[in-house]
Image (cartoon, rainbow, N blue to C red; front, side):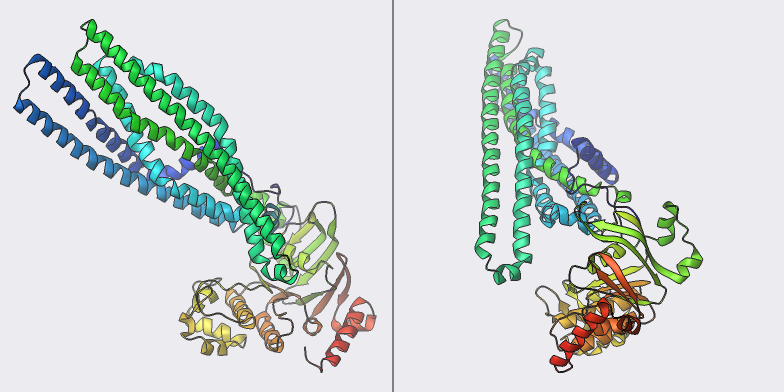
Length: 598
């Protein structure tokens, strides 16, 4: 792999056009159901015209003296039948719309999570993990929670408004034209709102992301916070971020109230216009009292749907802001981001290299002229050249800050180099000191990287790493639930589990970043033997926490201030009396002072 992620230091927010395109693409497998939604919506909205039109006919019959009990009974039956049909049609439409809505949201959420899992760690760290957490939790929840408001508005309300306007125009063209009086008010109101609200809601969502980041950092750094007495400082930062959210939320609610007040003015203006029009038409005998009554009832019937549709514009602004943030992650260009485990042959061929099958069979890893910096200004690695041969076990050693972990992260694909070339096999696995135990059974935890492994293979992997006894400690063996709310493994047991995972994954290259460090533990020897067994027969790169681990490797690479300063076997480096020899002398003295234990 070569090159560096070309995305910016923050996670992007998609444009409205890109979001519409992605949402439209998501509807592809749901369009038949959406067509049924449109058909049912039109039909059920049409039944809503029956009530005001029937009342209008009754008014005219009464005024003409032709109305009787039979007429009233007939009108009542018609209205009840229309109401029942409209209720059934509307309910069915909303159910279909809700299923489509949530199915599409589920697809977007799955794409978001899938894309997030491939993002370079460096990008996520620069953007802040709270941003990604907020997009996959707060933003998804915002869209899901808006469903009860959005679905009726864009289905029942939308169809009702369209059909009602047609009905009013059918009664008399002038009744339909009276809506022109209120239309400018609605247009001005909505345009004002759309120009004001998006920025406010975007700022609110950004403030929520900042709050999430502060909370996540406080949780992850709990031990550090307690150790340095930073509780009050962290509390103040979380509190400040929370009050920032409150301030933006109050601004959003103020704009919302102003929006609603202008809608109420439009309603009063509309009723007055229809009454004046009806009075004029009746005076000229071009309309009847019944028609005017029906027109007023139809317009009154519009209050709910219009307000519902316009009220949801408020919700849609927040939903749109969340969608833009989700789509921004989904549509991040894959080719511009360095991926771990890229095929060496395929990647090298795109860079004009000479990597071929013969070399690949002899060398698993090749780093050439590689440099890297976290901030683009201060390099932490410079001019790194490293070759790891097939089946070779290499140890990286050096003082803290020498660049060992950064080099391992670049070889693993977590970061991309600024300059130079890094070629690794496609099947690369990494184990760090911070081993995560997922919520689920022991079997599920072990087969994460080998989902098709059976119980016999799982037990063999545990046995090969000397962890067979772990199953005896679990109440229900492989069926024991681990992780949150389940059986809690010790740090040493979690590392044993991770090493067994490595055996099941069977990678071409295994990278152990102090995976067996567990400083001060009486299980150090056990974990070292487990690591040896896990690496047996495969190429390995180990960041050695204990120099006894490095001494057992085929080759040792010594790093100092971001450069490789020495390389060779243990005996060669001790004889050379360089940096490694001094480190080994200090290590031996430490072991002696501790009585020979590690």
